[in-house]
Length: 309
Image (cartoon, rainbow, N blue to C red):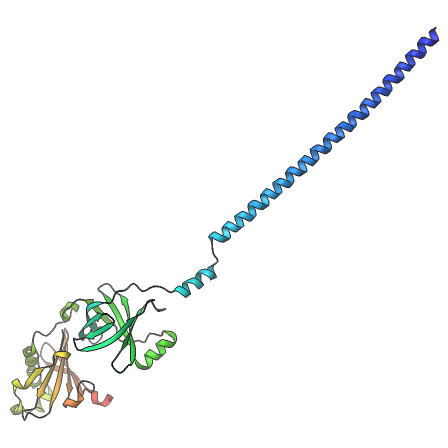
């Protein structure tokens, strides 16, 4: 009996041991399966995260590229479009050479330019500024010859430079601006004294200046004139060449034949008197220029202009 009980107990112990072992193996397999599943989930999350980050970077790169164009494209666009001209030249202007102080009246109107109410030209104002920042006004005369007036805005109106002849052809090639006299433009029908330069009030004032100068014995030229042949009423004004500080007079010979011209350019300290000996020489072939001191009518310089022709 004791042997049977012992045998039964030993068999139960073996069964318990076997069951425990099987349970441990099953638990171990379950754990392994669980660990494998978590690893796969982790990998999946990392993969999805990586894809999202990559998509985010790509989107950011595209957005940045779209918002900020490269510099060469921007420069190319500017070069093609140019800088638009906004300067309005139409209207009346009084012009004065900065060096010679000669004034004249200019009117720009409907593609034409009229100077001193006499000379009329066809014009075309450029749509864009040139590379120097000038508005280009192309001027064509009655002989179909063209030149340009280059103008910029200034504190008092605008200032410009004329480009003619060979200088104009050079400008057409590479927009080279010549070192010519600057012309100051002020809007409206002004007088020379609006530029700080005195103007002539009338023809008699210019004749008085002439007589005071060439009757002044301090000037050698006073000895050359024969006053017996001189009459004041032989002077007449040339309206087309008279404006502001410029007065142009014609002197008819006492015989009634021929004559000559004298042009008076008044300045603050001195006045220039330019002579044209003979009707044919006016206005393109001046003969002589005297520079006269206003205070005492003494000629301080004489230049023979005919030598330059």
